[in-house]
Amino acid sequence: MQLTRHTDYALRLLIYLCSTEEQYVAIAEVAEAQAISRTHLMKIANQLAHEGFIEAVRGRGGGIRLARDPGQINLAKVIAVTEPGCDLIDCTGCRLARRCKLPGILDEATLAFRQVLERYTLADLLKERRLAV
Amino acid sequence: MQLTRHTDYALRLLIYLCSTEEQYVAIAEVAEAQAISRTHLMKIANQLAHEGFIEAVRGRGGGIRLARDPGQINLAKVIAVTEPGCDLIDCTGCRLARRCKLPGILDEATLAFRQVLERYTLADLLKERRLAV
Image (cartoon, rainbow over all chains, first blue to last red; front, side, top):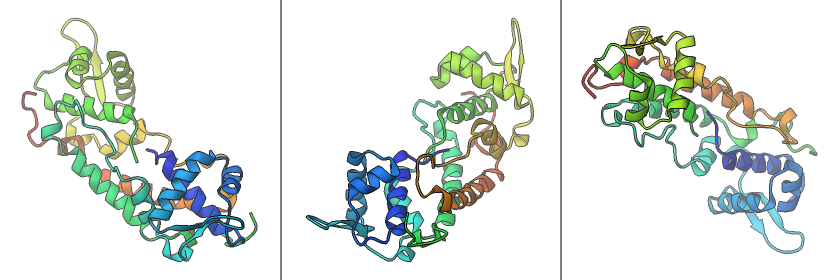
């Protein structure tokens, strides 16, 4: 079972922004520090900005930063945005799909997974927050 | 979030064996019915046989069948075998990995996921068991 790389990188970006003391961080800095392609990170940043998790300021001295307090950024909500398709398996081509209860059972298990994440925010992720990386 | 194709196919194989009225089923029959490559299915069947979920009889009239009653085949146990690596994300290269609590939180969420599956067996998957496919 794996989360997509997209989610992985989105979480790395948010954690990085949570850890830094700088007001605005350049995408290039996060890309280099976290070994993520700058193009990929730009797409992720756009999505996270669109969803209100981060905000961007253009120009000199600009960059990105968290748009809310880390305690207001719920992990389940982040993952709901970055993993919108929640089908754990693909039933296409399975001859028994019409009378199989597995999708419902997997939905129930996924809900339990998300309910755990709902209890945590970005603020819970770092043992020591706001320390230099 | 996705389960591996390996798990997907293992579940399809078990569900098929649970659904059929035949005593032994040829791998080729399952491969064709479920649109899975025969080579891939053979590997999966070997693993499931090794773990005691199915049993195989060679030769004419042989094939594979469930080794236990479907009510004794727990879904969490099947997935524990087919998804042994339970790292939802790969922290390699993340500069914040040493002080990040995300892996522990994801482990907790994965445990909740597995605990739901522990409540179900293969017998719970088909709305009408032992009917012709």
